[in-house]
Length: 82
Image 1 (cartoon, rainbow, N blue to C red):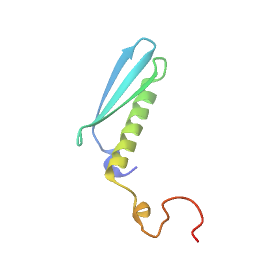
Image 2 (tube, rainbow, N blue to C red; image 1 turned 60 degrees about the vertical axis):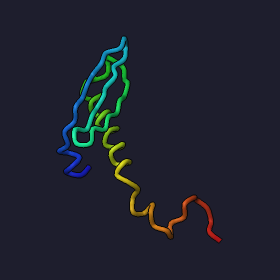
Image 3 (cartoon, rainbow, N blue to C red; image 1 turned 180 degrees about the vertical axis):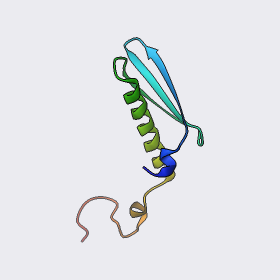
């Protein structure tokens, strides 16, 4: 995790739906939103951590491909180059 990700501001929302909880996390800088659903007996901190982890995954995915993936010498699919 970079320092930018550690110091990011997030809005976290918990919604109780019967025996489950919907947790939404929003990044205030990009207004990107993700949601997870977990059991209502799970710890609030655990659900919050999981929602933020998913948000960071989505933000990293939106940031673009890694340098190794854009290297033209890297094969696109596994296998033997003949």
